[in-house]
Length: 307
Image (cartoon, rainbow, N blue to C red; front, top):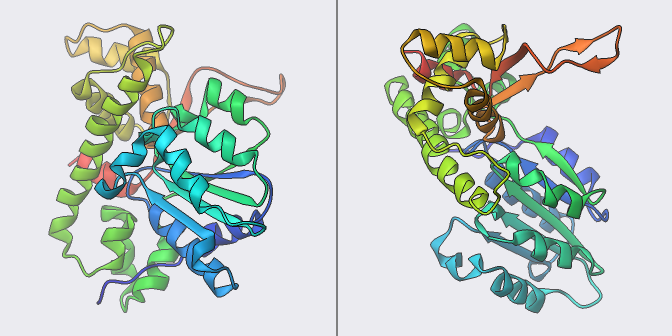
């Protein structure tokens, strides 16, 4: 099977529904889940609808060619030069968290007429604190997940559906593995790379942003983060608390506080490795702060965490 690009129809429809609306479209999700591809597909849809190429500004901040634009003043100046007079300009900023103080750029662009902004981020920490205050009421968040089994089947059109399901349960739905004919033995190496990138690279970037915030506790131990991630992966769907994780680590001769464990669990959530489902008190009509359930974003990651 040749490499193909899977159209993320559900997410494209969500983006299209907000096209030309005066809100910033923020696409969040774990690395390699297809955020960059979704932006490209949205741009292709705009072209088909009659938008001209000069109306589209697209910048990927992980591309070395755009390194000079990691300075927010240079980025703003570059985009400002490309704005179309009396026509809508569609601005796509991919992995914008790499630009320090990027919120100043986004806020300034938002104030202009005929500007439609789309950004992707790989860390929910960016959607907290001062940034939320700055963009309050100005953005909508679209959470992008790896491919569903339905999307994989539509792309691969497998002859043996049962075998395809077993492969999906083992390897998950990251687009790279689903869109090309990769032998199953290679999947663990690719998934291990994603896990290490998120844990090591993202935690480093997150920590650099937090160093200037004295109120934020630090999460600098990648090995500890992986240990906690593996534990959460082993109890997916079961109620779990920071204290329970702490007790498990202490029983393994690891000295650690419940507050530290809580910080690391939050870091896993911020990086979209896990999604937390809080308990809800039906009688009191409020979310409970303890014994939430934690779910992995992709089954393939569970395979490499728990070989």
